[in-house]
Amino acid sequence: MQAYLEKFIIQSPVKISNILKKININEKGIVFLVDKNFKIKGSISDGDIRRYILRGGKLEKIIKLSSSLINKKIIVKDSKSSIEEILNTLNSKKDNKEIKCLPLVDKQLRVVDISTKEKIRGYPLASPNIGEQELANIVDVVKSGWISSRGSYISEFEKKFEKYLGGGNAIALTNGTNALQIGLMALGIRKGDEVILPNFTFGGTINAILNAGAVPVIADVCKNNWTLNSANVQKKITKKTKAIMPVHIYGQPYEVSSLKKIAKKNDLLIIDDCAEAIGAKYKGKIVGLENDCSCFSFFANKTITTGEGGMAVFKKKIHADKARILINQGLSKNTKYYHEYAGSNFRMTNMQASIGVAQLNIINKLLKIRKKVFKIYNNFFCKYSYLTLIPNNSWSENSYWLYTLVINNIGQKKRDKLISNLQQLGIECRPGFYSLNKMKPFKRYAKGKFYNSNYLSENSLSLPTTNLTKKDQEYIIRKFLDEYKKIK
Ligand SMILES: Cc1ncc(COP(=O)(O)O)c(C=O)c1O
Image 1 (cartoon, helix red, strand yellow):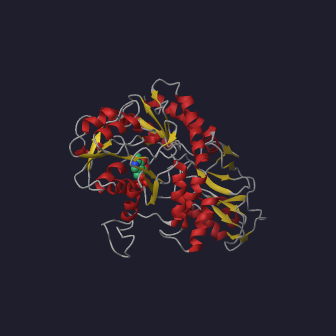
Image 2: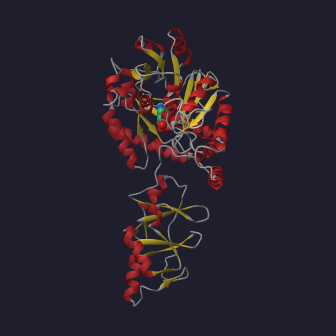
Image 3: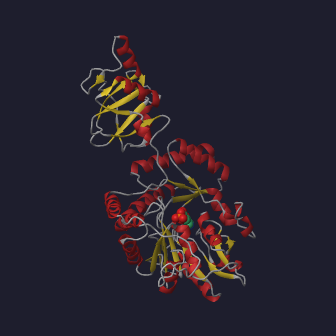
């Protein structure tokens, strides 16, 4: 049970003294009594207990659900209620008294959350969608004892992933950042080699290059597609350039064929950062097999998750074989305990892979849900000329990872104020990725001007994208537009 909820509910039969202790902890002057199935039965306030004691009642008295001390006429709300409905109830009165705490219940009247004015159930930016099958798989792993990086779920996850992409040589590992690093190392990128990457990305992209010992070379992105393009890459190529690490940012594919042409002409490798892009399509095909290596992340906010986790998918088996050794401390496949390379431990656990297998089974459903969320937002926001929606090209399809838009020329200060105002209404937003050239550890790798990436970074934000009803989205949209009007 969540710690917050635990402060407010107590199972009956229970001693009056224990009820008082709970009231003392939650500081709201009330507790809710539940039966053995957590079904809500009523409330008792500190005032009820005071009056009872003044009448000569004893602290040791056991309160049963039939007790007259319990107030059975309480106000509850369906746990699926919108924030607006919850706020309206908290702002109303019952018998002329303020409603301080509002239990949120499921269909069986079990309490699943408590809302107060200070803590309203909010809309997180993204939350995982994990259920019974994931739980059953994890239990299976724990019972089997194969909880580390051996066990049948790991190869099952890899094989299923290859099937989903339609080919490749997939290797499951600890996270997306390590997948990118191993991609570089297995392809032979060495100390001092230059790798071109976009300025508008998450820090994991550049960290992977640095961790592989290579030199990141930061390039601007194009304004209309938010990604690297051939013109920006071309400017950054030197004699030391060995690879490009383009990013399908916010699940928006970059224009692959033009970068491939440049790579071919200059004999460069391409390692794709697909961390946010599982299920995205380029020219009708799911991304992940276009280049030498493609790397995915399964962090909890990603479309499919394994808690933490990643996948590196190599075009050639020879590179995948090398990667498999590198992620296993560089240990030889043939001679036990002999290190063929200096490597590391980037292995995924069987527990993570078991979740991944269950998640891959429902990936199409998860993508469909996100696509619907994007569609609803787009249908509303496309009417406003001061907004620029996430790119939409005839040759690509987004992975619908995080719904992100640009508020034209709003500027970082006002954008951040908008984010903080929305946060107070229970709507979690995220600013566009900070440009790498603006951050201390990375700015030395950024030479020249970065107009487009800095503009996108300072004027964009992401809205909640998962587990939303249409009503929830309408609330978010309304509040977004209201708050924008206030600060513009
Ligand atoms: C573009 C991009 N690259 C790399 C990563 C790193 O992935 P992970 O968090 O699994 O290490 C992320 C993660 O969010 C990302 O968004």
